[in-house]
Length: 247
Image 1 (cartoon, rainbow, N blue to C red):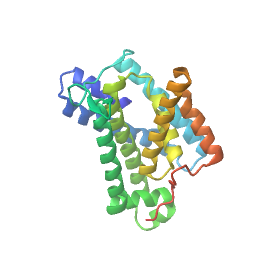
Image 2: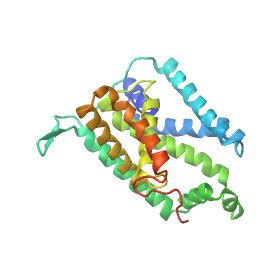
Image 3: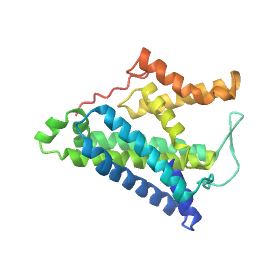
Image 4: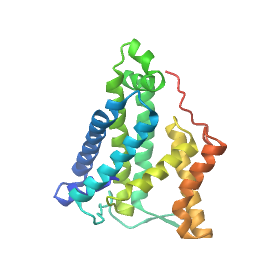
């Protein structure tokens, strides 16, 4: 949710919402790239557990920096489109929800085009699959890794900006959102953006059903339960996602 916080901060200092959103995405992408350069790259090729611990530690550091720089208070971000809720099949649909679906669609299509139609995307996929082989054919694998961190951070910023008008944002909400995002990706299947979106939809429905028919207090535990069940029962995901993609 760093992107949402930065977006709220930039709008708070007087920037128009579109400019603030672009600035927040660019700043978050830059933070992702710098984190890879300073924290992850020095231990590349080492124990995966070390990389995991460094990533978790980096998340804690960024959260505390956000606390000290942006403050502990929740920040609100204005909806992208003002107006009353829309009515569809007897249900009220927030206008911001339409933006979320639209941005999700654009992100999935853009990623598919990037990975399948551009040399840069193919090089990134090759690095993820066989780093040594990619290096042998002239791919700068270190650049691809840094770019992947920046791209992931930028996509996270877009998600934070899209959700912030509905949920508000603060320095401590990123951890829970991260767990839910990871659970959705595992549920749908890693390596397939469409499957990850489907996993997120299924997870959201499960949370809503739990809140409505069991108890709202258990809603946030659904992601952890789903994550554990899928990892033990079907690690490849329910929707056939796979990290093995042809280059």
